[in-house]
Length: 141
Ligand SMILES: [Zn+2]
Image (cartoon, rainbow, N blue to C red; front, side, top):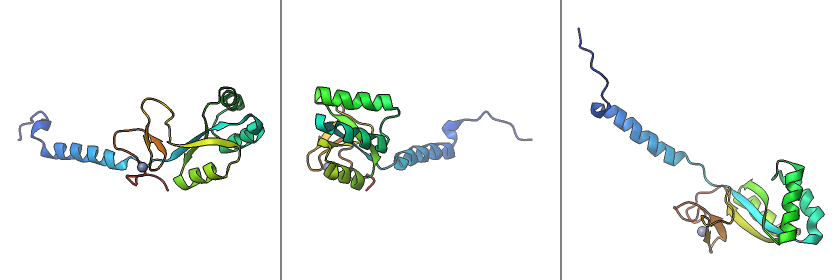
């Protein structure tokens, strides 16, 4: 008969290795970032902006959409106009949407805040402590 010892992780090398592997894997499995586009909307572009934002599915409801567009126009403020995009799509929207003014590129989920940083080379507003995701080549193209 073998004596049954209580499980002791401190002497279980396999458990330590599994735990290290899990945290390493967690870091590696973070997805490359996607992008949001923010912009201002000129009063004359209201209807075009509403149609485009509706098509882009940025806002969950029509009320939320109309409120965002109205506030952007009234306050000359940035509003999110497209989300969760690969870089090529975001750049295409920024270059080819006549109803946008002053479009800006953001890491998905970020907006103007104290936490957002800026890469002048890529004109990307981003978060986190690892630097610009385009410089690091960690993004969806
Ligand atoms: Zn950069």
